[in-house]
Length: 135
Image (cartoon, rainbow, N blue to C red; front, side, top):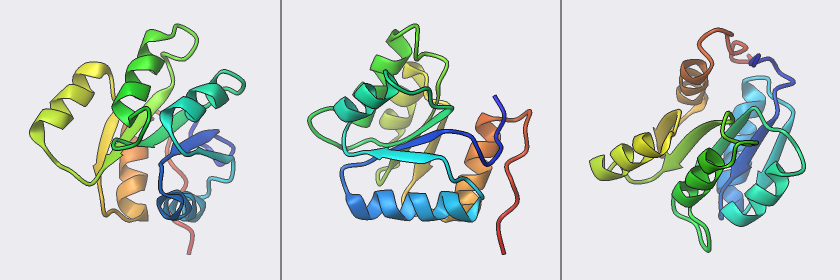
């Protein structure tokens, strides 16, 4: 999977402000093909109609958490290969371990900037460079 500007990304968060922030950071990195969902349930519905290269999801959401979304994606043969970055305000070791065991590709603790996001995406797609930060 290439990490070019056309890569399809799904941002999942129950706060519209956070979706807007992540969209803006992705735009700074050159990504334009970005969709969003307000919870895990709607994210799964979108993933079943469109293929995404990467999901960037908040942990704490209702009715389906980002962790539950990750578990659903990893359990679905049609979705299991989708890369997944978990975003959370908490850096609890137990949460990081649980997410790793569930198959998360990377983990970001809020707040973060475009450079942090760029490094996390590069770590998820090591064979393809992420576009440099736009000036």
